[in-house]
Image (cartoon, rainbow, N blue to C red; front, top):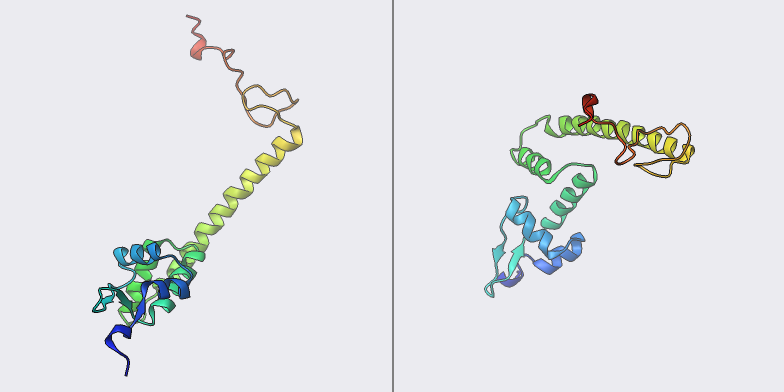
Length: 149
């Protein structure tokens, strides 16, 4: 039989096995992602053995692009123990979000490629011919609405 002192994993053991730091454990605990651990007679936190697996699930979800709030919602849905479309719908929403980011990044890449190809040399006073980006020569812009005062 395991002694009460060893009824769980200490903070450092969990952190090491899960590949996170101790501050991450405490943060996840404050956020409600991890249940508050029991305490040993000496006051040390003792986490259940499945905490490492739970941390791996959290880190995997984050690598898939889910925020901690989204992970918390998904964990909560899973704890309700009845089938829900939460994970599937969350994944569908995340794919749409990623597709939008890819489109934005592709447009940015295209614009930067035009700048490189045109050999632009300044954001405010570019000397390249047919500069693909609008630029402003500081101090030489005409006043708005033709106001010369």
